[in-house]
Length: 213
Length: 260
Image 1 (cartoon, rainbow over the protein chains, first blue to last red):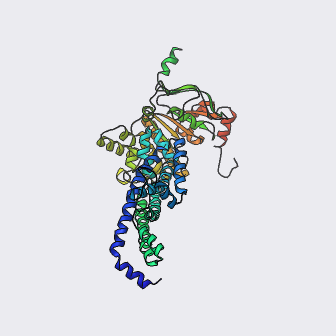
Image 2: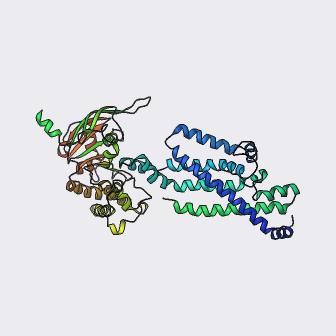
Image 3: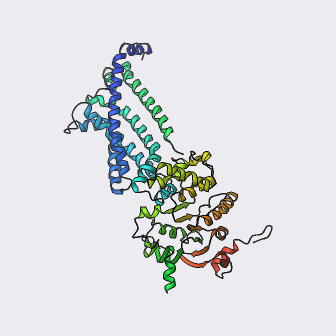
């Protein structure tokens, strides 16, 4: 690998790399928004429902164990959500992101000082009031930690989405593997790594702000 | 018989042959056959060792637990017949760790029940200020602090202010000063004793500290393994001849340099 040629490759293709990074980011953001919209309410729901909790956490854990490339493959033949392209990729990314969000929401909502919950009950708060005014605000930092983990996983897994034609930074990596070109692989890998680091840093900042000691 | 009926009309709380057991395989009995009348304005101290059932009795009053047998009347209505949210909003509750909401300021903690009861914000704010003065905290200095910025004693003061904010006729306190250092504890006990006399509320106070019981109580009820073994005014209590009473009075008899 020659750093000189890699650098000049980057400079020559900077518009394409930038475009792919944007595509990648779009994919991640859409998947994360959907995963949060499903994961957080579901996490709130399973606090009081042990059976649903076991089912939801079980299913989410199973998705997490399926190798990502296989999951993309499995989804292709499924009607409506499957096929080649972004939509299938987003479904797969959502399934991956769900477990950390769901689990942290549940853990955050249940890991609250029992004295605080006792006080809430004794002061005549309804279940809904306890959930929205006490449990949820106190769980926010833990929930956000789950979102942060999920975001980093999703940025990584999204590179594989290129295999089913979803675009993004994975396009460079797959092409680079096929052509045995380090410069091409790095053109996908470096921006993906930078995205992950940036997301980790920014969400970490928000998480610290939300933490209630 | 007539006088008894007339008197019971003034009972804030009444236990009628109450038993409570945990509903599991062991079916452990926590309290057994408790009958107790607590008139309006009394400061009743439930005294007993750990596991004697004191806290259970307290939680039966505000419906956090329901009796396995018998019934508890609060303001002459069974806790089974009460809307539990309404019942609890009319009963102040103070616990050992204060249980302050860490994400609320002191003012928000104290104003919680008024806010839940949808008081106007000006009225809530005035009430919060009044309550903080009442427990000896300067509102200007403390209103906007978070619980983590308070000492243990200050936290308990806020806990008391919060419990009193909606002016409930009944106050339940579960070892509220138990986790404080001895100096702060003595300070809060003295202040609270004066406060309790001034407020005229019905107070049920749980402790395992006889000294505290003697200081605060108008009546002491001693519990042993879920049963009431003694009930007396503080003056009478020390003279009672019951082994468990003697065990507690022995805990007081310490003089400097002398073996107890």
